Image (spheres, rainbow, N blue to C red):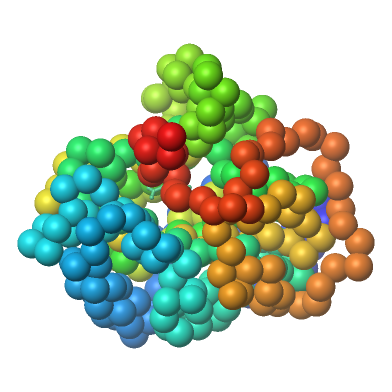
Length: 294
Ligand SMILES: O=C(O)CCC(=O)C(=O)O
């Protein structure tokens, strides 16, 4: 569906202005959006997982831990597939947030993946400039990620930042000079970005970020000892079909969360960089960008 066709249907959650902003700029930010009871549940469940990670000693299938992680000072970079780890996360992904997804994808929406990213003031927690779709190419670009901050997030604790309008620009090469997957723009491409144009998506706990899969984005290192949890849920229009192995499928991957499954795939002619074959396993964007994948 075209943005015009999607916008012609009445919205469920977003305002028409917010939808238009997403389509023209490639992102939108909704401050203090989550109802207090929903936020409180997400925060409480997340605290349990941070505690559970304390005994982990190496990055694994559920907890991606960073250098220096230990029982006293958790450096949990990511809780993988939260939708499979606790029912509350899946209820969240297929409830209010799926309604929001239908405002942007059109009536037929498929869940792609979820992840819960943290920052811990360990100076290794910046996420370099990248685009998402090269990690999981689809037949069209009606694919996006809805983030929810589970703690107040300002310029001190590493907010998500986007380059407005970049979803309409080129897709970048995310391999390094030696041909290894880097999961980020090559240094010369990143250096060419006009940092004065970056939009930093900040807000109190319960604020929402949405970015399109082509939107160039990054997040700076946290300068605060307070953790920054960002719960990310990724969706596609049902007619956007993945054509490479899913990096980290959960039991809900490709589940139709609104409307019906597609009979026909819609194909965007703009080409997409292919990722490595991850059918044998995937670590995380943090590991790839830090060169930990070997
Ligand atoms: O956690 C963040 O700040 C950004 C994460 C991100 O862009 C990603 O995981 O693709």
